[in-house]
Image 1 (cartoon, helix red, strand yellow):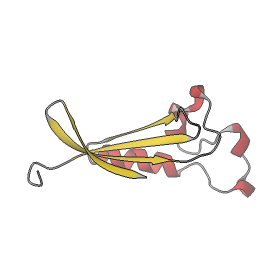
Image 2: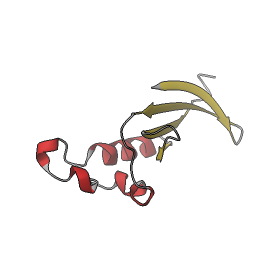
Image 3: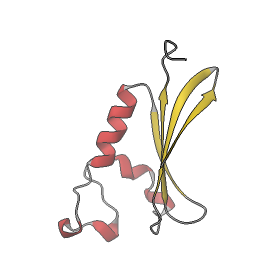
Length: 92
């Protein structure tokens, strides 16, 4: 996990990056990860944990704060989540 200041389009953002070291996710499924109750094929049973709502909640909360969240596969393996939240001009 890392937290950095990021500048883009004349604005300041907090960029939170979270990475795991698992197998990653098929490219076709990356955008679906943020859909409520969506789980990748290998994780569809409840015994493995989760119901597929965590990333949907994350996406909604981040967007309500004016930010973005995206998922991508790391070149070294694993999944990366990037959360970008605007920094208030009062804090800069």
